[in-house]
Image (spheres, one colour):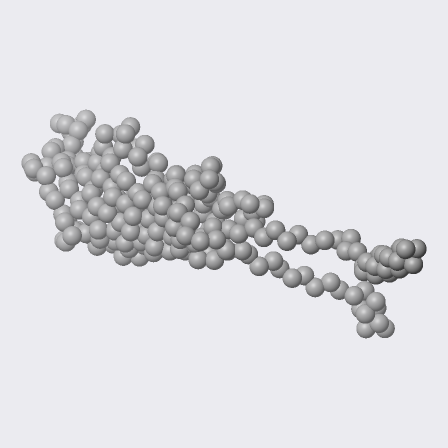
Length: 259
């Protein structure tokens, strides 16, 4: 019996010695991989809805969306419609039309672990089709001796100019913040450069407002716009980002090479 007990003790000692000879990893690697969602984000512009509610002379709606192509790049689009009536010094007119903007956004923000926020720059190519209606106007007369306070009225009846269109390029700077799971609040400012602008024939009436582009300034092709949106991300799949491999330099090797 004593012989068997001694044999078992020897086997246990050999096993413990073998386990202790295996090196212990004092810096275990994190095996948890965070996957980011890829999908379609759709929403609506809140600023145009607010203007439609508070201003009787304006009605507008803009749908926004983007699709994630890679870790930093997003395919983006805006589709909208605007109806705006403006009163100037000599005339009152209404513009009604639709527009489409297509482009790409690049996210410059480095998110913390688990975040999905964006601070992005982007570009758009935009196209708009619209109608202009000259509701009424006054005739400019430099000789107003008898009517110093006003100008004489023009012809009666509204004049409508149809089949107008315009194209422009747009630079975008914006941000999107995830408020809740897959729900984002965003905002952007836009600078547009007018490329083409089809106006009524015979210069009867210039395009003073283009849906999606905003006000047209005489003698300038630039326009400024903005939007504030709320959107929802429809995740299609998740993908892990590949970590960047940083090569460690060998100071001893560098010292030898310098010599």
